[in-house]
Length: 419
Image (cartoon, rainbow, N blue to C red; front, side, top):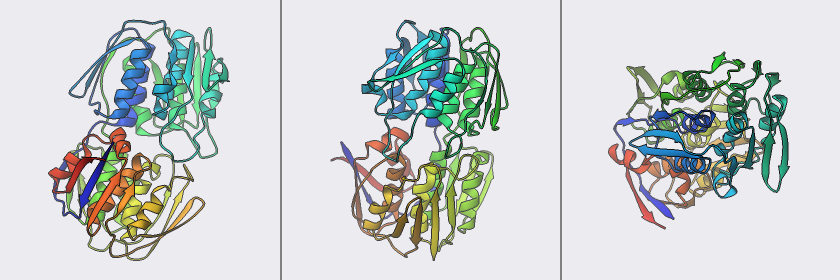
């Protein structure tokens, strides 16, 4: 197990954003819908991606991964069981359920694990697949699904906290091989869902309305292979915007789509940053003293819950009181205690966090609790006086490829050591 040691740093330069983790994983799962070869480029070399590779290999795929390019072929079409030892580490692995059910008529998938950010049930996944005609039971920690033939249906997929990205992905992948038309109402609108739909259409699926709350799918009898490049990771790009603001550093973020980050850029501008974009590059020039703002996390195109922790670091350094309201995962505040240990002044009450801005943070030994909280602690360490040690950084490697190397290019004083 490794740790980061970070010193206060001044950053400057250009950073290239990698491919999207949250787009790559469902697209990889979608290759279960065909026996033909698929080639997916722009895939980040993350722990989560390698976990999904292992899952697909267990399910009969032969996979080559070289320099961001996945080549996926079929060698065994019979297995339909994904073991707990793999699924427990990553929630996104549950999205193999839909394509397995649609293609192999049955699936046995362990209930998922992932980061400790609060309860994240799979009831919407099960509801949507049942409405398509699947028979589903939960036994000994596994979701067991069977269906001789899925049939299209008008499905309302809204939950208590809005739409669900992974549930939308699961139902969408199952619906492309269902008989007749499926309408998914209250579908997730995230760019990662649009990217998945585009990949499925390259395979021969008939889909309309992706990127809106109403997706229409006309089932086809089979799908073929596809050659595809995933979108850039908007959460990685947003993290570097937060790092720029926290450290008062002028940065150029290249490769990301700024139109996937409109709510993030709006918040950054309210905090006083000058942000412009041109030719796939985002230019971030923060002001010296940040303005306090209120942030509410919402489904896309609202402010992403996956950037809440990183921007809270910026608010810890703003000149006044700020309020963060977490409407996606109300318990996603594991980073608050660690930031307070570094000199922040944050009070939490239920899904709310009140932040009183301070001029300085101070280095400390802190513990990474989940993926995005880990990134927030890195940002805090870059601006804190003295030395910061971040323990249990394996979470970082699940979602950020070579984060310390990218930061070093910008001038960061950061190194990885064995814990």
